[in-house]
Length: 248
Length: 305
Ligand SMILES: Nc1ncnc2c1ncn2[C@@H]1O[C@H](COP(=O)(O)OP(=O)(O)O)[C@@H](O)[C@H]1O
Ligand SMILES: [Mg+2]
Image (cartoon, rainbow over all chains, first blue to last red; front, side, top):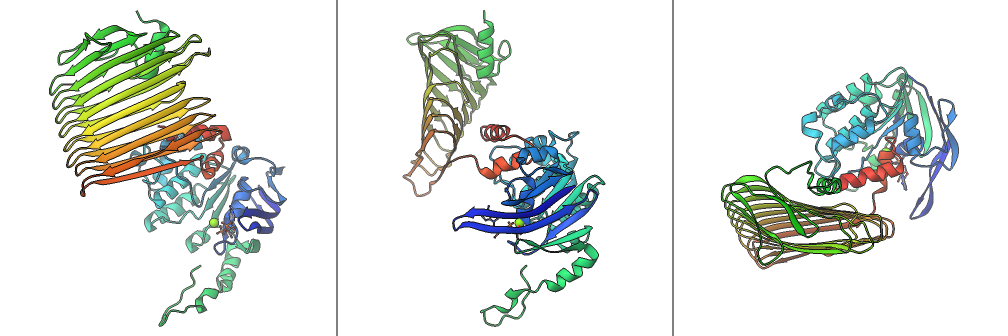
């Protein structure tokens, strides 16, 4: 359904052009759930942003249901059926949650508030709230997820949906992502959470801008855990450190 | 009799459909054309000057509409209104001015409002500006509002100018006495060659007086905007100025907030920002299927809400 074919990406930075992704190829089939995992900065969000058309690959192609969509812009891809829940959703002064949901539902069928309830937000409390700094990070994040549920795209990419969300809502989040997944949908979750990795069919490990490992969850997950050798553990200069955990 | 154009202008500036509820005064092309007083809300034409006195009796609750419309070209109208909101009264007052300039001369309205909100009274004041016309004639609007909020009074000013006014110079001066509260919401959009200047001077005179000025603007085309919000605390008051502008195209925005305290218990804050629409905001809305123009429109209309 979604195919990233040999994607390489360079981005312009203060230091000039920086390579971000190298020869990333990923094929994602309808009806399946995928997890993208890997260290911070490895390129997971960049993969999602290339799929959405936010970043333009330097080489390679993106296909959606066999159609080459490499040259389509963000809104055209959204209208085809690709959706992306941002890792860091922007804030909007003055814009009510209600308007955001209505815009998301414009190209979907049916309007309802259930998406808010599903993610643990009471419509009565949140519909009129504005998407500015008066909402906490966790609230913004949950509204972002509700927006994608409202948009109801065929390809759904959730970028670290659990970040900033409390434990109770986390359970709800897993439920709602799982139960809204359908046979004609691709669901991609970028995450480090074992609970999320447990619910997917396939896991893709992104490292240093490439696909390092991929396969069935049951085969891959034990290998990833084993290979997650953490170099940070040995390099502490504080005296008397008694316990070291991998920060990744 | 009101024409269809009059009705349209009244709807734009005062959200009126048909005759206003409550007390009202409609001024058209320099003359008062319709007026209704109510018990406790007297509207009296001034004898020595153009304009009206609106006198609200103590404790009175109600709505007052005093819109101005102008439909002729090459016309200048200057008006002095006085609004006296009696003790403990609670009034919703809708002013505003709509200009339809059909010709090539300038049409201009200068409105001077003197407002007193007496002890414990509450006033919600809405002033919308609107302009239209397809000839070269300009639409000019220069409101001046001088406000006194007495002890324990509350006033909220909503000053909105969204489109069609070529030139505006707005002056707002307020004195807030002990326990008085003032909130000013300003919303402004300019486009083309339009210019807008807004000077706000708020004086916090005594303890427990508070003021909040929230100004949001969007400058498009080659338009120019200047903001001078000033907040002075003579007494132990608290105040907050927030000026936030979106700048686009070849526009110019200048924002000069000033805070000034003469009392060690005073607390004043100002924040001012000018910037373009954030790229991530556009991207977010486009990722929901909006085109870039639709995304821009949605961001601006939310911002000016
Ligand atoms: N817009 C950008 N400009 C410059 N560098 C970027 C940009 N987006 C991402 N990067 C860099 O690309 C690398 C991968 O980032 P990202 O895809 O966000 O990683 P992940 O999501 O796995 O944490 C990082 O080194 C990051 O700093
Ligand atoms: Mg990321």
